[in-house]
Amino acid sequence: MSTISKIEKFRVPPRWLFVRVETSDGIVGWGESTLEGHTEAVEGAIQDLTERFIGADPSNIEDIWQTAYMGRFYRGGPVLMSALSGLDIALWDIKGKKLGVPVWQLLGGKLRDRVKVYGWIGGDNPSDVVAAALERKEQGFTAVKMNGTDAASWIDSPDILRGTVDRVKQVRQIGMDVGVDFHGRLHKGMAKQLARLLEQCQPLFIEEPLLPTQPEEIADLSNAVSTPIALGERLYTRHDFRPYLERRAIDIAQPDVAHCGGISELQRIASLTATYDVALAPHCPIGPIALAACMQVATSAPNFTIQEMSWGIHYNRTSDQDPLGNADLHTYMANPEVFTVKNGHLEILTQPGIGIEINEDRVRQAAKYCLENMSPWRNPLWRGDDGSLREW
Ligand SMILES: [Mg+2]
Image (tube, rainbow, N blue to C red; front, side, top):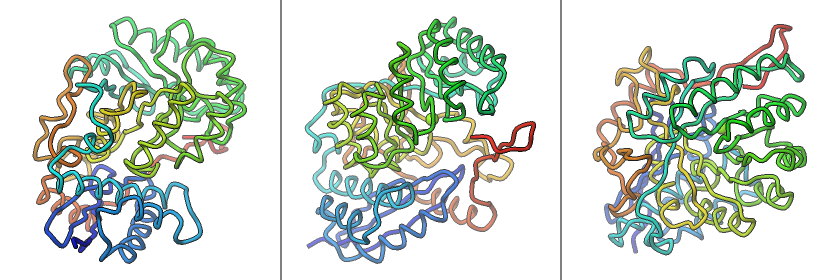
C-alpha cells in the first residue's frame, strides 16, 4: 500500500503558504494553505496534520478530510480549515497523478472548455483605475474587480461614495465588466446607499457588502437592490454558507479553496449553492496552486460563473523585500503558459492532478530566503481621523 511519507510546508513571497505531500511510491502532490496575515498559525495547524497523517493511505481523501475535521473536537474556522485545505488539494493532486487524469475527470468530467476569469485593479486606495483596467485588458481580461471605498466610519460623508460611482463608470466605459468589493468596510447605513448608487453602473456583483457576521442584514440589502450580491471568502465549510442560503442573502458564493476545506469542500459547496439558484465564483487573490485547484471545480460545476485570479494584483508587489522581484502568479510554475488569459478566459487544465507543474527548486530557494529575511505578510491596520479603528 502507498502511504503518505512526507508533508512539508513552504512560506514563499509574496504572502503564500504551499504544502508538499510525498507518498512512499514517490508521487508528489502540491496544495496551498495561504491564509493572508495568519501564516504562522496555519503552519502550526499543518504541523498537527503532519503528525496525524504520516503513514496514512493518500487515496482515502474523504476519510482523511473527516478525520482532520472531526478528530480534535474543535472544528472549522480559518486556521484549521486553511491547513486542511492545503492537505486536501495535495491529496487530489496525488490521486489525479496516480490515475493519470486531471482532477475534474474525478469530479464528473468537464462541462466547459474554458473558464471565465477576472483580475484585480485599483489596490487598496483606488486611484487611476482606468490605466490599471487597460493593463488588464492588455493581458486578456474582460472583467475586473476593484475595491469600492477607502476606510470609512460607521456613518461617513456621502461624498466618499460619489467617487466610487465615478471610478466604476470610468472602467465600464472602456468596455469591461466590474465587480465591486465593499470588503466589509462599510456598515449598513453607508452600504445601502452605495449599493443603490452603483445600480446605474450595472456591476457584475457587489462583494462583502457588509461583514460576514451579518446574514440578516445582507439579506435585507439583497432585497433592496438589483445587483447580484457576492460573499464567501470568510466562510469555511458548507455550514457557514447555510444561513446565507436559507435567508436568500446571496446570488454568488465565493468560497476560497485555500480556506473552505480544499477541493473536496469547494465541490460540495458548489452543489449546495446550486440548489438555491446561487452561482459559484471561487475567490482566489492568492497563489497558483489555489487557482489550479479552483479550476478543477470550475471545469465541472454547472453553477460556476467566473474565477478570480491574482495575476498583477497589488499584493504581489513585494520587490522591496523580495529577491525574486515581485513574485507573481507564474513565478513558481514550470508550465506558466497554462495560465494565459485569452478573450477573458483560461483554457481548462488538462495535465494529471491539479494540472500545474511546480518549480520546486525555486520554491525551496524562495522559502529559505523568506524564512531568513522576510517578515510574514500582514494586512494594514487602519484608523480614522478620530483615531478609532476602521475595517480594512
Ligand atoms: Mg473580497
